[in-house]
Image (cartoon, rainbow over all chains, first blue to last red):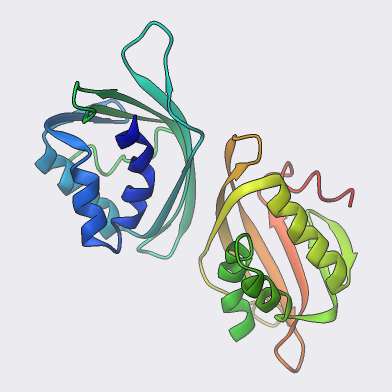
Length: 128
Length: 128
């Protein structure tokens, strides 16, 4: 679960740190799958594009999370999260939701699903 | 407006930095007034107690703000803000709202009013 515990901090640090961005991407397998608000995408290159788009559209973003827990009888982990951010337009926003993740035998993240409480988030990313 | 521009960052840094806490308090006049969700309190000592309570009740908190603007024809400044945080219980949360501030002739903050969009925030502080 070590990689999951690094995820949110590395995400936020990737805004200003190329090193953090590389460390973030190294948490995932190359054939990882990520799901944003129900829309599925595959591959680490698409993931990198997504992150770059997040930081093009937002001048700042901060995640907090409750802690990853293995769902009973399931093969995935879940955590609640809360975000505040500032759009490039200057507008500030918040969002809450949960993430669902699966790891492979090497501890790499192979699946990451973002389930926002509001369906408005990532609207612009799902047309990627 | 220099003191207002330092306010949110120093607030967040005060969680872990005594120096930031002192710098935060120095932004205000000693007889400052602050209003939390409609409840008025006076004096820098009560302000310090409020901040200490925030960081007792929350293990982390992050503010983002749109930028202070002088209200036309008025003597105060306003900005929208967004917050994400983590309660000591481990629960994460968000909040949005606006702050209203007045400065004295030395640029010190003499009045700070927090107007959350949801009336739930600071419920526990207004019984201080």
